[in-house]
Amino acid sequence: MTTTYYDSDKARKPIASEVANLWAHRGLIRLIVTRDLTVRYKRSSLGVWWTLLNPLLTTGVMFLIFGHFFRFKIPGDTPYIVYLLSGVLLLTYFAQAVLASGSAIVNSAGILTKVYVPPEVFSVASAIAASVNFMISLMILLVIQVATGIGIPWTVVFVPIPALAMLALTAGLGLLIAAAAVHFFDVLDLTGVAIQLISYLTPTFYPLSFIPEAYWWIIQLNPLYSYLTVFRQVVYGNAGAELWMWAYMFGSAVIVLVLGVYVFSRSWRRLVVLL
Amino acid sequence: MIEPAIEVSDVSLEYRLSRSNIGTIKEYAIAAMKRQVKYESLWALDGITFEVQQGEVFGIVGPNGAGKSTLMKIMARVLPPTSGRVIVRGRVAPMIELGAGFNSELTGFENIVMYGTLLGRTPERMRDRAAEIAEWADLTDFINVPLRSYSSGMLARLAFSVATDIEPDILIVDEVLSVGDAAFQIRSQERMAKLIEGGASVVIVSHVLETIKDLGDRAMWLDHGRMVMIGDPHEVVAAYEKTVGETKP
Image (cartoon, rainbow over all chains, first blue to last red; front, side, top):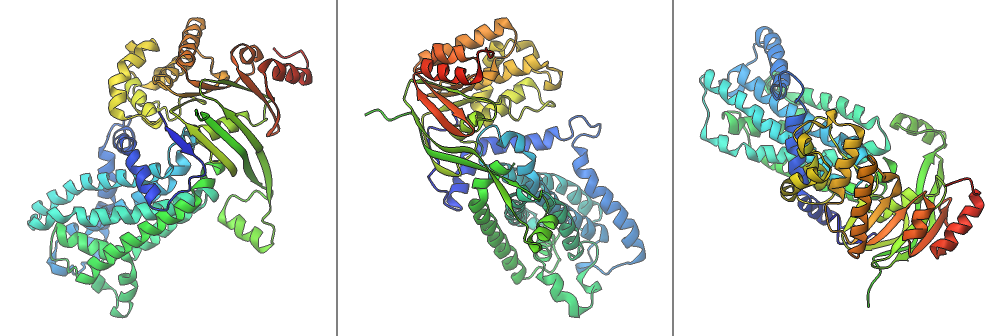
């Protein structure tokens, strides 16, 4: 029952077609997301704990190095481990979502060249899977917040707001990268490098005050700084999120998503032939 | 007025092969600077036009590389045509390259749900149908076993059972699909025959020319992406056989 009426001349309407396609394939998206969460580690001994292990190990190593030698002054006197882990979790989410959704179409070539599924379904489903992973990994942060005594503020109910904004941002970037990766396979390697660079330009393990004030604009220009500050503000409070950061977060999310969908919409026709 | 089930009008499909093997941005940048970005066009299909009426069995013959699979993928919506237009009216069961997306770590049940959903059905419906699908494929005892312990025959049976578990208006069939042991082949052919009797239109690609002659209402001969001949299956097959000699079955 793939379709009841198909006309190859019916042009895609940018954004409208993608939204309709994603809605029509919501059952498939749900399956892909659950499969991503359960199958990936099915044969490994640690199972889903792998999802948590990666950011935890990163945080552990950074905590040992930066927690001891640098003794940063964290805004709002937040315990360093909470500041660090919140940053690592959000940046892991960003990296995973962009890489997974960017490589999703190339990785699904075996399916896309055999049955008709709109390619964007795979890209967006991967970004959603990363966001679900992120929400699960938040449990650890909340446990540590309780353990360190800063507790969990009521604003934690707003965590889905920066999480959804991040989903829009990464899905948009993912679609751009996915379409490009079909043409040039080294796009994915470059993406990995770019993610690493932007991660260092985001105050995950250092506070903004560690940097000379003359260079703050570079960090502030990086949208991830706004996402991270807003996320920290709602998850543990006292992070100094300002109104412009909320605006920058929403603005960049919408612009990147629309841009990604639009560019994808113009290139999808050639995609499967190239796979 | 009854509209045709499939309308293919002046359809062409271009595969671009870059001559200088440009696969990365670096290579592209270097080639662009040297002004050597040249593509070689390969027209897998070149100006194909035909219609398949409702309830008609339409055969396609031709040598390897003629564009038969590409044409089927265009009708199955997998590949959008480079130029020309395709209109398909009705629910399509694409019986080409069965088993897309099978995952060896997942169980038979999970794969039934996933594969059916990839084919455009809902996960809920597939969960309801899974037991019967497995039973028809003789795999009831294996439904909760990961696919990695299936034999290739079992995989083929499962894929066939899922793909045909609908009442399609249009079947797009690659005859290479004849799968499983003799008993299963008979059962799968019976199921196909039932679907055809039910009024479904069928597009069938076969190297077994007898099948095209026996089942087909019309046939088309494809070579190098172009249509050589279309019409009565006996005449088309006879003309095609002349060019390949009598050696082929």
